Image: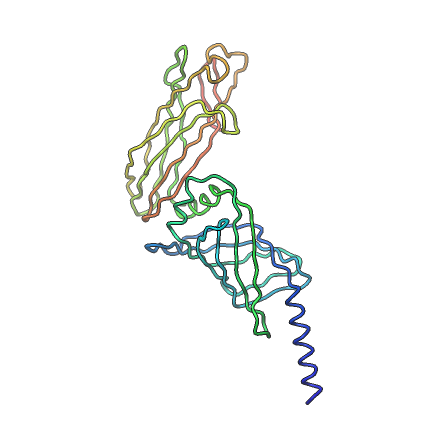
Length: 289
């Protein structure tokens, strides 16, 4: 009996020592978001998380919970579905459930900086009445993070740039007409709260040539395909040369960015599209890329 107790104590000691040397897994990426439920203050989402286990042993647990932060801003909490199994020295795809605060998400919409996405949590360790605490960190662009959520929430609402044409060219300005298509495949009405169109000189989307905005919101009926246009006026002198005299090349390019806010199921989310426009200054022909 004493021998059995001694062996048990040694095993527990080894397990405790091993737990103290566990390296925290690394957050590689968040693959998807799927909206499960829309509550008054929260969004309930399913998400797939890619995690790398740097340890020389596999990790498993049926009790994992965590809080989600962007830097120090609390976004919500989550847990791991169907238990956690991390293969040693490998990356695993883990299914999780998230409960995110709506007001915190909305406060991020107009921010564009890169921040640290943090998962602070703990997991129960089998055979030992002790929890292992972990801190996962991942650099992410805020607009990219919001867009990932938005694309899955409004995946059945599609906005595209269908056509760009030159309406008129004079000595100082190029007058463009940009036609958009909005396909609402859902059985619910949505509202476009605001829409901006910016035209840039280069593909880094920094040298702004023109900016137009639709300030008034408008409704889009369910199960409908809609088309609407917005004018943009470009000052040719901002392009570094006059449009009419630049005929050395048959192909020049502009870069169009559309940003908007769409309200769907009482959720207001951002939407963004970037397209390259090739034009021939001799024929005024335009080709979307």
